[in-house]
Length: 65
Image (tube, rainbow, N blue to C red; front, top):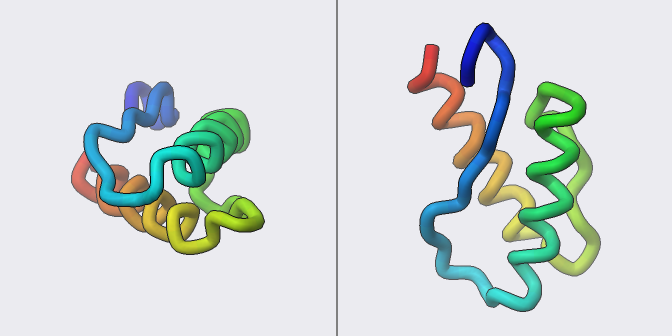
């Protein structure tokens, strides 16, 4: 976060199935940065991974304030 904007989101570690989570994370990260919000739809077939990523980003944003 810089200047009140989400500039980058990096998944450092996760325990989800890689071939399911990675594409979902990529799509969600792009959307969160583009829209500047964590209020994005889950990715079909990766609902748990999507929710986990959103929650982790929300936690990180709280810590960044």
